[in-house]
Amino acid sequence: MTIRGEDLLISGAWLLGIGSLIDTIGQTQQTFTHSDLGKDLIIKGNGIEALGNTLQAIGRTRLLKPERELSQLYTIFGNWLEAAGNTTNSVGVSIDINGAEDEGIIIDTLGSGVQGLGAAFEAIGASLEEVSSYRTLAITGNSFISLGSFLGAIGNIYVINEKNVIGEQILLVGSWIQFIGSLILINAITLEVENMEQTKKNVNGDSYPYSYKNYSFTYT
Image 1: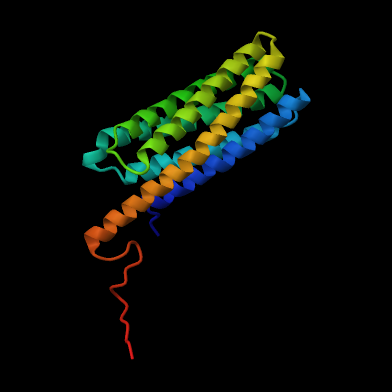
Image 2: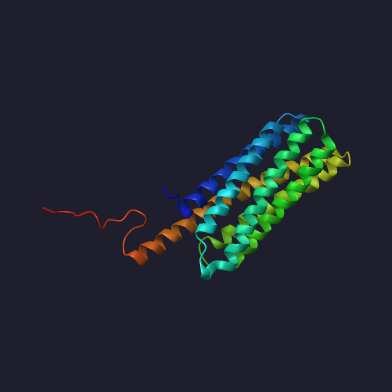
């Protein structure tokens, strides 16, 4: 059974949203309790986000077309960078929990920076697309995720410099901005896939992927 690229895009977008929500809940707990409470959720959330980014990268690779090659290559590269960044976040927070706090925060900071760069590449890729119902949403969603990720890196820098209160507040704001961006991106990708389906329907002369050619109707 071959999984369609469109299905991977939708699945990846929803996993990104779910992972971002879990991460945000964990960060909220950590900020308000001023403890390690919530870090387990942050680890899990980033892991789910990384999986979502990976599915999106694979899906877009399968759907790569010559007329959209440049924009899609930017987006695919951004997807992989985000996956690497989220994975690095999970590793960093895990190291932090296991006692090596400074090293863990540094790795987490690096991961947030890579994730922010990846989302920025995705925003650039979206900006190179033709004007469409989903283009602006894709640019906005990825820009929010990029901004939130970079705020996460900045927040960690404050924590490293023992300015924990403001650092945790910046981390919290960044996580919520990322979550909002992921919701916008779910909408954007849903519209993009619907556009793909409609295009295929127009080309094939029937609905896609469920064709009515094999059905006959008798009216009495």
